[in-house]
Length: 119
Picture 1: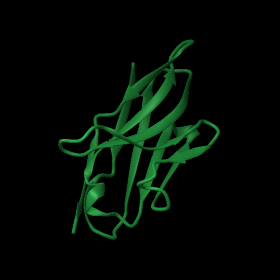
Picture 2 (picture 1 turned 180 degrees about the vertical axis):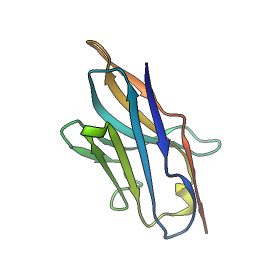
Picture 3 (picture 1 turned 30 degrees about the vertical axis):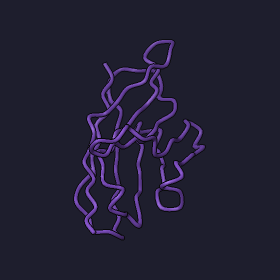
């Protein structure tokens, strides 16, 4: 069984920074791509950033230049460094990972962590 556990959310003033972490645990062979998504109240879930197992990164337009995704493959952990936060970044942030348990990759989701940015 695979679990993704997020941490690092909280309340911060506009212009501040937060760092989210998400660790994959359980019995599996490898973790492929890892992503961060977010969902604000009344909105659809939005992809924020992604990183391949080889370290190639991509970002949504709304966070480019402000957020940085990274990972520690030895610890099966992905990070999201969020700088210059804006009130519109307020959302529940979810970790997503494609994990190979035996032969085929399957997507797993974390439980979400709340990020609130005050103006």
